[in-house]
Image (tube, rainbow, N blue to C red):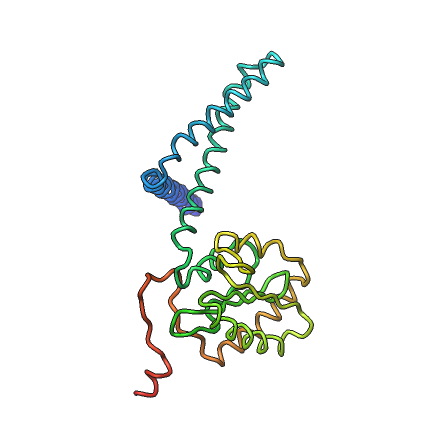
Length: 245
């Protein structure tokens, strides 16, 4: 009997923690909605139209089958779910619009990718916040550059040469994030990468990632902040600082 009491207390504690986490998520969602509603004037009308349109559409289909009153609540629930999806996409689009063009934005987008991607941000960088990020995934090795095109071109070439020595015949892709011709816009970066062909398996991914991580640890890594950096910010040259010391 004594053994059952701790188990019961642990279950109660787990339920309490779960309820608290759910409450916090709802609070965060509400705050995000309020912020987005102030910036996106079309948000509320679109969400209302989504709910009403879905509900009426299901009601109409149900009416044809003489099941309209059964279809009505189902249509309303489906409308709510679709409205949540629409809200999430508009919120994501707003976030990417704000981050677009800021140093570190591509690294932030890569860090927030879903799935089995091995991301190492800023494996090479300049003091002007130009950077090359490395991703290991099912397509192979993907080098993602952000910054001034005339500077990142050299960074990409150097990093690609280093990587090629360690990965053998594994495909290496290079991407420059931007809005010019031949570049990939920030908001389309994740989608672009998921459309790349799958060339290697997870075991091969782990092997390559381990090799490249060892290379990065020997190199010391580049000094660049994580996430979008405010315009006008400056960073010290770590090598120059080291020489002064």
